[in-house]
Image 1 (cartoon, rainbow, N blue to C red):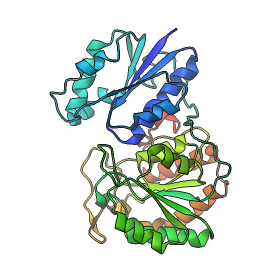
Image 2 (cartoon, rainbow, N blue to C red):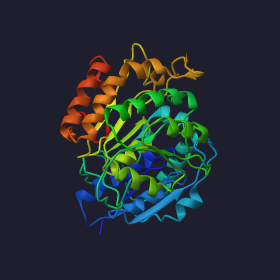
Image 3 (cartoon, one colour):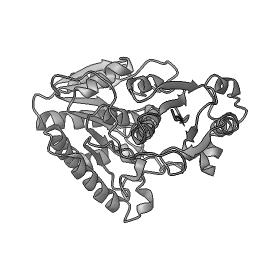
Length: 362
């Protein structure tokens, strides 16, 4: 039996774990007889890999991404080196990534020396056979029906990179008016446990729940319970966050208020989505590893693409997209085609920025 180890240790946000699961599925689909293992950052929700029946082994590595003296050799020995193929995260070929994450670079150098199998890069032709664009579905309880929205106000970045509660009131009350009777489950992780957590406060959630018809709180739930709620909702709504990738892996459409550093790059086969893109001339964004644009004043410092002015400008599009997704009137093919067209306009035709896992935008 051929074995493939997806060695995908990166930063801890949940979206990077989803990347690893997606690549693992592609290697399994290319040869279902394979033994598939995955290695993740210990601060990611590695339990998600146990919700993927095509993954046989789950391993974790604990490290400091920024410490060049990182030494993970003792942890590597617990994995074993008897893998026919070891496919790594291709980002660690990029000088900027290695410079930004010296501890991660040290880990991958140690792993390269330790594993004896053929080395490759996840999702590329350098490595074992791989079947791209597979529909990833986490093994979660199947809901009897789907209804309402699950909403994540923001991820784990600094608070200025997400909308104010005033802006969220505007968005959600407008949605409640557009779709009367809709329930909104407000997700959030406030507790500290070494993983990522939201930078909103409980009082802000409570204010929003009191202001929005149909809003209910769902805070500090275990990840599986959160994703079970997402699976049972018609739409998941958030700014850019790795949790949105997990929502797609749960099979739920993602409505994204896009902006900040990173564009969306994961589009899970068969699951509709809609990214509301900012006007980059008015609301600078997508700086990636470059310097952030200057904050604007919006109840304190605020990233331009998350400001009240941007949200007011794009609220009609967001409401129309929410209606399409909630009514089931946007399928995956149309979602992908529409996103490709909007990206083309957003970037002024520069296709170098239209990158995606498995090149689905190509």
